[in-house]
Image (cartoon, rainbow, N blue to C red; front, side, top):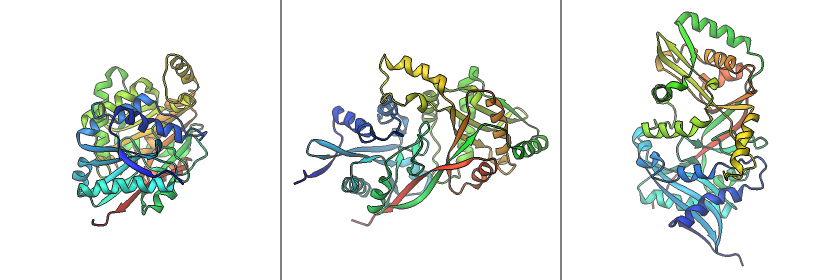
Length: 374
């Protein structure tokens, strides 16, 4: 007779470590799952370390059969999201489960938690916000994920859907080979540059703090009307930028200006996942030198931020930004890039990406379920 299944809140440091560790155990046999740095996962889920918790409540839940952990999930109530979008929803994230029964129990626990707080629906997976990691991989399981992108077992979609969740939005990842520059980009970029007196420059590492603030302003203004977007607070943006600074390469980013004022930015970062593969997420004294050596073999980047001032959004800046960024990377060790993630209905990015030869190769799904009144 199988042991009874229970779902309980994380209530100790030991249980917190089990919550972190379970993801590594559940995905250990998947050759394409890249172990994130455990120290980063600890900090992401620690209220004193992550300013996201300043405007959100998070409940970590573990599923057990007897003494064995068989699943985990986070229940998230982001007050800033609900205030921004006039929604009344809770989120779930950091989802892992051994089987469908465990998944239903975990999701049921999140739903009960959401009802107790007066929320009318649950959306996810979001880990813990769209500014970090989001979506369930539903297409493109045969390649490794890039930095800060999810990877999960194929069966998770069935688990979530069988619990009554339906798609609310898909997110795309595009793969772009940094070979010859597409002629169509050159033609469109030259036209836009001449008409609007736009200059493009690399980011200045000597002015990192000031550059980050310029990027934050552009990013928040550019994304404010996007589905589900909540502008990161100053502290949240600084935290993410600080985490990425050690791997940042100024060749991978550009800023567009008109009369010396920034109007657009494109930020990509080296895919450190290529170096992390096989480390189990642990940076012991013996692993750190190996990781630093492996950085030489990073051959791809993830384009994770592209923001355009609203006044220039219809100008057609995407080809110019991609062209200049592509030129900066020509002749380097970087051979390909991922554009991710992109909303399925974002024609301003999806159309020119496809036109320039990028290939949509992964799809991530966000689900939602309305909650019946208790």
